[in-house]
Length: 200
Image (cartoon, rainbow, N blue to C red):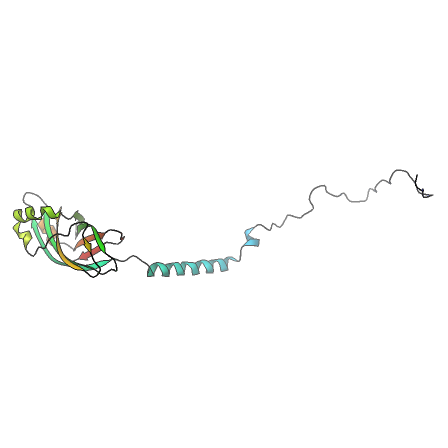
């Protein structure tokens, strides 16, 4: 055996005194103030609101500068209206000038007429070019100042200008048509969100 130190007691260790505090057996971290809260992780609300307002101003300016605009323009040149006998409808020949003011080819998807009267707003699709001769035979007054039709799928090169006619029927009598507030030809191109509206 190794050398023993004389006078060392080999008895049991002394019992702890009753006055010593008890140490808890769990974690000793004080979690009363959490560091994962918005108060600790986010900047003050005033700074956040200023930053959000700045972003909104930039988005509004960009949206205004990049807003969709019609690819073309023109004018509604001539309007000839007749009442369809035996019906309370009016047939209208709308002669218009259309110019492609954009930088790419304008493809016509559809044409319609819009009528705004004191009693409401009405719209109608343009008649097919095939039906023009039949309408002109039945109602010769429509032919005054008429031009060829502008059929769907027509393409206009940049800078090109055409004068065409659309024939539209509206479900209003001729008297109501003559008291109209506005009359428009609406040309909807392919690949464009904003139609070309020619109003008189």
